[in-house]
Amino acid sequence: MADPTPVIDDLRAESEELDLLVAELSPAQWTLPTAAPGWSVAHQVAHLAWTDRSALLAATDADGFRALVEKALAAPDSFVDEGAEEGSRLSPVDLLAAWRTGRAGLDRALRTAPPDARFPWYGPPMSVASMATARLMETWAHGLDIADALGVVRTPTDRLRHVARLGIRTRDFAHTVHGLTPPADDFRIELTAPSGEVWAYGPEGAPQRVTGPALDFCLLVTQRAHRADLALTAVGPDADRWLDIAQAFAGPPGAGRRPKGDTR
Image (cartoon, rainbow, N blue to C red; front, side):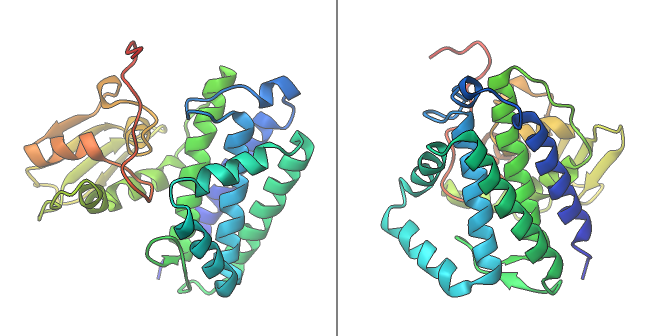
């Protein structure tokens, strides 16, 4: 079994980079609206803190996490928003402290768990590496929302490898949540990393292919940009359809982002 330490290390680095971005914000900046309807910068950080606490509970207290799932099932349409809203009402100092405490606890739990451990989650159980990957994906994606609200351009790193892999692994899931039958064959995915390295996945001779910048692929599967604004190329009808529905996150299909210039 692969050592999960590298992705745990990258999750820590991604979180620390975002922490540096928000640590010195003014009270007014915490209230700036983000691209997520109704969510301010504070809501975004509160959501990360809430999800880190949920993941920590899943890793350390299965019964406690089961109670959290039952609460979610009782209010499936509002559970996530309620968690973000509650956290957003904290002072910036208290919100930052809660986020830092939760993610530090999760870091310790993931590092000390047996590598073959599996944790309960809102969908299928997750391995140590999968839990860290999912948290990295969310931290990066919500960090983008925050950076956009602040007018800051974040430099992409090769930590995106984990987000890209998750986006590829969730190909069949994306079809299923749209009521579609997943393709029977693997695709060939070739992505150019921020470092210039090419990340390749799937059979080299596969007729269904996706190529382009890794950053753009990650923006697509986290639904942080519309496909029309990204330099991704699909070859084959199945690959083309996938790029219209791809999502790396759990839950129902997201609304996605409108193309640039679309003010509807």
